[in-house]
Image (tube, rainbow, N blue to C red; front, side, top):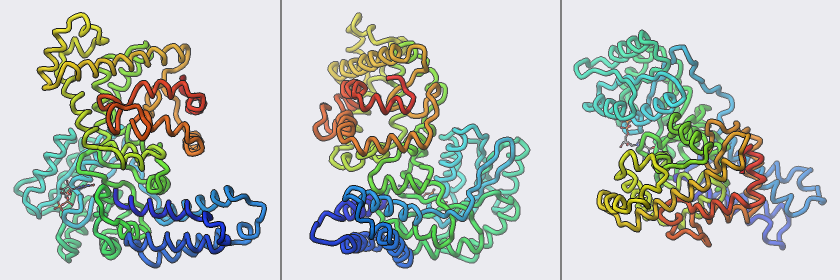
Length: 531
Ligand SMILES: Nc1nc2c(ncn2[C@@H]2O[C@H](COP(=O)(O)OP(=O)(O)OP(=O)(O)O)[C@@H](O)[C@H]2O)c(=O)[nH]1
């Protein structure tokens, strides 16, 4: 991810602070600040912002209470340093002054996209449409890009894939006219969110800004979003200022955060325009889209994890009916091969394993040692096996294959795998079915809940306080963290292959063990889950 290296360096500087017992406190703080400042500047963060951050951290850490408080233990001082650096980094990416627009249900909310050519506008329009559609809004997409040949086709293809209604024209050349017609059509049909994609140019040109103003006049957007490519470095600041003057956008979507660009320039744009980043694009796929929150972003940057993000992501990719059916089955102590297939599909939609891992405390660094390609190959193998089963087999508890082994041969042939591979999948499904039994027994009388599955219907809502406590617990208990790592086959893990348990799924035996871990049970209680 963009800035991953920055995160490692800041973390290193913070963790090394106070490690040299020869230095006094003030010297330690200055050494740490020098390392943080160098890392930020090398990542293209604006120099004025870095200097302000340095001053703020220094003041907070060396003020009378911190400096003069001799009763503070080394651990307490370290905690103070962590907290201060964390808060200041959050402030760096937080445009607190600006209220973020929230679309209202049963009303028409028009959202207009602006940005340079190739920044990721069309892709992000569709991603945002999917995001809101998953949250119950009636969403339509309008293509007001008549400048680039093929723009309408691109939006159309994306929209069809995402099952979002769309509007555009192959013949009309006036973008404002197409935009007005599209918005009017969707308004008439009582669409709640209408997203208007506009054209881009290679660079900031008078014609682009004039066109944006005209479209804006006719569609009267409730929110204008600027799409900014995270890889453009220092130019981001100047670009966003120019756009701000003509389109007065109220939010930013940062795209291509999955690349290796420095990304600090884009972050500086937030401060330059006092405009909040609302989402980040983390890949080309529709679901590679994360709600941006300063705390989540900095947590991930520093490898602390981001449960909130994990839950948001799950809500976007999961299918409500499937989830309900799964919970219904689990509450009855069942876990069919079809449940397994749906689970796997959801997991794969959540993006590369490294994306998921970054959201789990401590996992991000570990994933660096894992062969992601191999893990993904294994996962695909399971998908092929499950796809080769017929309806009766999928809806069964798997025993049908033991009774009629010829079915295993057929599935292995159909999926281009071996009988051992099919057996492995069946074994995993059986383990999960046993787990469902355990959940049923332990939650008898209560609501069913399953560890590792965020925001399921039937599970209590998890408050931010609970989340914080859980994160803290995970950080404080390396033993518990080791259990989580083992589950994914991390260092010391029991998984049959790097990165995953046997067959490419989290190791369910480890998961079972983890469920019996008293610390984990304690945490589960906090989450209100029966374990
Ligand atoms: N890796 C990565 N690629 C992205 C992301 N967002 C968009 N892209 C890719 O960037 C390229 C340009 O994206 P578009 O959505 O066509 O950009 P645009 O701003 O609409 O371009 P114009 O219509 O020409 O103005 C496409 O290949 C996208 O797949 C992202 O978050 N990560």
